[in-house]
Image (cartoon, rainbow, N blue to C red; front, side, top):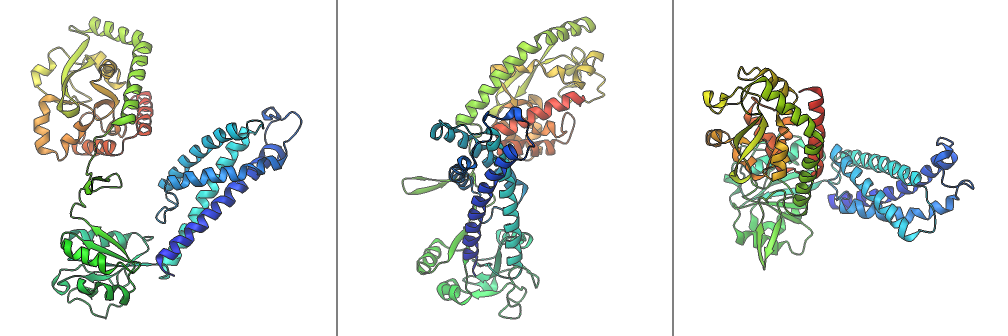
Length: 490
């Protein structure tokens, strides 16, 4: 059994198991709701007794179709999808979408019948558990099959060995469920290439004593002009062509030679260090392919939604907190000379400079005396009231005005003092990446304990993660974690 046959078989089994779990979940949910006696009678919508089970049997095709379409759309029927936490989280999203879609379909299709929402909710939960367990069992089964050498995808590298090939082979060696076996390397001058050492018994060693390169256990299969013969001789399923070590003319010759055989052909591009994940898309201008290495974050509908959330929440916060903010302003004026509001130039999105607002927590002219430096927790420049305000992050409240104006967002990398930008951009790699989005009142780095005078390199790493993985759900998570941190006085 080859790898493609195994993948197709496991996908078919997964679909059948999903249908069985969904059907079983509906029946079990019906029993729990109406027959078990575990739910209080006050929840019943049927005053004349339990509805007939046959009514709920009619839901099985509807729920199954909705679930299968959702799972397909979320790419949960791909061979590489497995029983990881990430896959479970995606299944949770599929469950939510399927529940909403099912309730909507019931409203339009069976609007004359009354179905228990508790049955729908329980059936969704039971389906979620069943689908995940089924995938976990098949995942373990696939691992055991691969461990016996069955269903393995036999691949060869075409071209010269370089750092990309080394990294690629290392990934396959460390990923137990990859299902790949590196058979060897094909090149114009394979015998003179520098190949990696692959230990006996690891991926890529089929016959360590046969036709080995002088300083390597990676098998030299031959030259690319004999590609068709080599694919058939070594029963290769996949070719990985290393670009640009293989000329375009040679790639075209390989594609032409392999037209009549079922072999998958991939390219390890020269730009692989810039391509991070599936978000690097390819678009076409007429017949010219263009690879997108980076997109402008927070644009389109989701960007508009983020801005609307900023406006609504900042305006609501200013209204709700206005008595507290007025009290703090009066207290500052009474306990120390100077203005209650401190304004400082900061740098935001695209290098735009703006004035950030904060309740003054330092002595007057503190910045003029020492210049642009970060404040410390035991900073002697702090006033007694300022120390209290900083502990509970109350000095940040005026920044809701910055959010309302559009200078900042509720969530994003913290804005830096303008006087420090030139220093950091030269000494910290990727420092300016944080200026691709609006600055925020709180951010991913801050809720992970990186506030104030902490490692700047680590903060930049967290800021880049936020930018590259941004979503409205991540924003909500950061806001909730911020509120929890404030509650603890961190």
